[in-house]
Every structure is written in structure tokens, then in C-alpha cells.
Length: 166
Image (cartoon, rainbow, N blue to C red):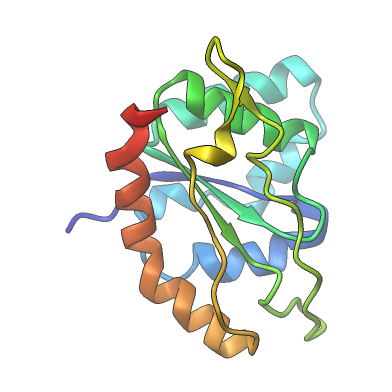
């Protein structure tokens, strides 16, 4: 199976370390894992420039992977990325990463599902009704890591396969 090009969405300030663990698992196309320096440069720009950067990156990807930490849900740019992926008909999946340790060896609390407050279609249904937000059954960081590594490709493929159902 070819590695997919995905767009990783996460809260940079709190979850960059956890997200880098997932991004560096070697399970997605290398072009998906643009450097942290790219985001550092982008976040200094205007809202219009940030939107333009997200749009151009998203256009090249087949799936949006939201890495969900304790305070990911409801953040402005994460909501924008989810809404953009939906608008473009991309696969969308969430993966809880609160069980991965940060650079200080700390785990964090489980955050809310970021798809719950995104309303779609004429009926304004919750996107969470259609999009998987995977939560590993493990609590030890090494087991969480291994479980995500073992499942991420299937989660991405399922998201791409199911994109027409919402």
C-alpha cells in the first residue's frame, strides 16, 4: 500500500512534541510531514496568509488527520482545517494523542471530540456522527504509540473510503 499524503492538524503550542511522534512513525508520505519551522513561519503571518497556506497544503493531501490533545477541540485554525477538508471532500479522521508523553515525559487529559461542534449539510448534523475519532485502549505511552503506529494507515484508508458518506 502506498503511503498517503495527509495534512496533520494539531495544537502546535501544546502538542507539537506528541504530534512529531506520530508524524515520524514512517506511516505516511514524507511530504506530509512539513517541518515545524514551516508552521513557525506561517503562524506569524496574517489570517489571510494562514488560510492561504492551509488551503494550498490541504489541496495536495488525500486526508486530514486531526491529532487530538487536551485542548484541541474548538480552536480557530483546527476548525478551519476540518471545515476546509470537508469542503474539499477529503478523508477526515481524528486520533487522540493525550496518552503520548510530551518532552517532559508527561501525559495529559483527554480532550473533547473536535468534530462534535462542526455542523454539516442542510440538516446541520454534527460531523462527529460520521468521522472516527480513534482513542487507543491503552494508557502507557509506549503502548499508545505502538497502537497508533499499528492502526494509523487503516484509519487513514477508512477515512478516505468513507469521505463520500457525509
